[in-house]
Length: 472
Image (tube, rainbow, N blue to C red; front, side, top):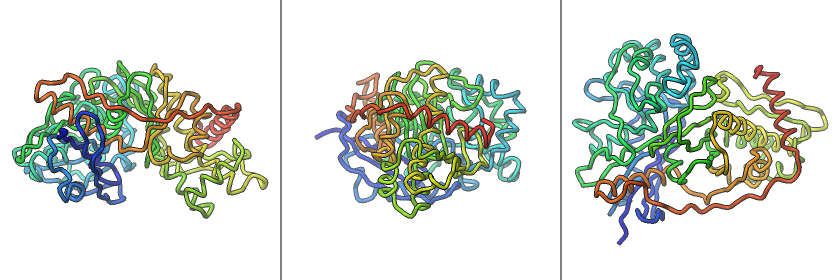
């Protein structure tokens, strides 16, 4: 019988749990449960979703488990370890003003980048703590402990639903997205935490990559867990030169680096990864839902949008879309809206709108790819993942826009798979068997090179529109 491990992806939208063969990574069973569609959520709903997703014996025979959770979310506990208020999630932009205040108070973006690898924006935890201190001071004064979503859920699993007496832990990957942990120094910056909240609460211990958070009453080993992007990197077995472009609710561009980054512009977040290396990352708020929204706009579904986009010529007849439909994180424009430019009577057709949606979404991510290159991150191969990566229209446009070899991994829950791989690593380490994570094969399909030189013109038009509207 194979040794079984489980991985949990507690994302913005749902909890997904997979059970794998610890030796090969083969997924043997999986279940999921939905989360509310909101920017703040009662954490008890994550626990309820976890229980639903693991019901019916899903974890029978499993030896170890780990959680990869949505990054940055602010979970605040009182002295009794009770949740004080709903968790404010990464995609809640109410703390944009707090981010600006913090940057100014510390002395600018370069100081923040040097301190934590990341210049604060609305998604980063420290800005949410500043917002709490300013807008809900009574709640802020009660804060005894600050956790991230994966930290909270990991503790709940160890304690069987009860946090009493459980050691609270995190990992370097998720901690690096708080704005008060330094990736290059490997330590908390409690001075920055105090700058945000006004006092220094308790924080979870930062575990090493293969350390365990604890063991449940039933004997299930619980790994340290990590953030969702770090989980995806583990699930895809990234090495230096590999870059992931993920097209989900948000868009992310990230790669493994042997050294930390410190981008004062704030475009690149200088995160740590879950293996002891680093994970420089660019994130956009707007990705796959841009396509869904434009499909509704032209009166079709996603399959129809794909057909329309493929029927249009590159450049969409001169149409360009800045897809900032939910505001934007990169560039930092939390109050922005979408802009359609270059409109004429001749080009305002459904197929051109569909093509402009695909091109606009990918141009924003291509800017992120350029930012990684500018920060010394090598780009040898791009792995295109996420729901929208399966679109033939997206694949056709990406091969031109990104300017690098692209592979599309077989569809899979790579965040959950990364958590399962971490669980397998922690299990082996607990037995003194392995200093490194297990080697799991990645199956992918290489995309053909793009034909023609249209992509430079598309990106130039996109850049002109962005400059005209936002001065960037």
